[in-house]
Image 1 (tube, rainbow, N blue to C red):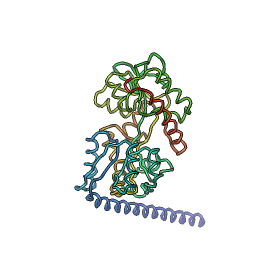
Image 2: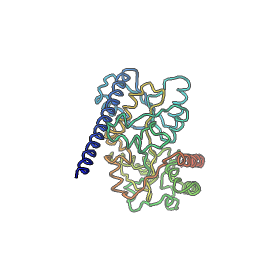
Image 3: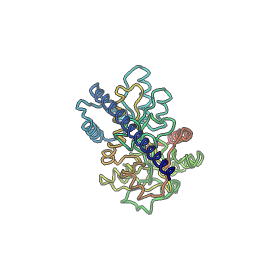
Image 4: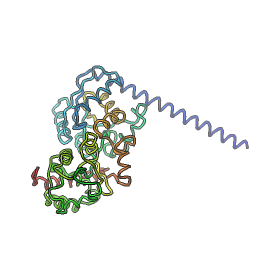
Length: 368
C-alpha cells in the first residue's frame, strides 16, 4: 500500500514537472513572437514591403489582405509594392539582384521545386516557424512543417495548392458525361472540343509520379494529335471553358469554383482517383530588407489571412480542414488521393518530365 502511494506521489510530481515545462515553453514561444512583432513594427516604417508573387491574382484581394494585416498589428505606416511575377521569373530575378548587391524583395512566392534554386544559391536560411508563431497561430505546423519537403523545412511556408482537375461547361455537358481518365480525351469524339495548357506540363508532369515518363509523354502526344484548343496557362483554359469555346479541358478546382462564384457555367470533376496539386508558398530571402515583417506576414497569411483569400479567390491548401476547398473535395471526391512531389527525388522526376513536355508543346500553336 505504501509503495503504491509513493508511486502515485512520484507520478503526480512528474505530471507537475511536465506541466511546468509546458508552461515555460509556451511562455518562451510567446516571448519569441513578441520579439518578432516588435521588430516587424519597426521595419514597417522602413520603406515599402516588396512582394514578388503571381498570387493572389486580384489587386483587390491583395489590398484586402494588407489592410487586415495592418489593422491587426497596428502598422499605420505599412506600405507595399506588389510585382506580379511568376516564380520562374521571381526566383532568378532575386538571385541576380542579390548577387549585384541590390535590394531584392521582402518575400517571394515559389513552388518547392523552383525555390530549390534559391536555396542552392545560398539565399535561404532556416527559421523556427512553429516555435516562433505557435502561440499566435496554434495550427501553423500544418503549413510550415507538415507540407514542406525535408530539403527546405524552415525555409518556406505553403500558402495554397494549385489544384488540377477536369473543368467543363455545364451548359454543354453534364457531370456524368465527363470522362474519368485523362487519356479518354485522345478519342476522336473530343477533337477540337477540349482545351489544354500549351505553356506548361500540368497536370501531366504531376501524373508522371504514378505513370512514369513513357506513359506520360505518349499521353501528351496522343492528346495533341487530337487537335485540342491550346491556351497559355491553366487560368486561360478555365476561361475558355467558361466562355463555351471549349466543352471541357484540363483546368483546376479552385479556379473553377472561383468562376462559379461569379456566375460562370462551369464545374469540375477529379481525374479518376487522383487530385494533382502543386503547392505554392512564400519565403523570405536571406537579404530581405524586412525579414521580421516578412515572416510575420507569411505566418498570418497562412493562417488568418487564408479566410480572406478563400472568400475572394477560393484559393487555399487542400490540407486546410477549415477551408471551403477541403470540404468540397471531401464531399465531391472523398476517396481521391492527393498527388504531389514530396521529396527531392520526386521533384527531379517531375522536373525532368516537365522539361520534355515543354519541348513537345513548343511545336504546338496556341489557339490551334
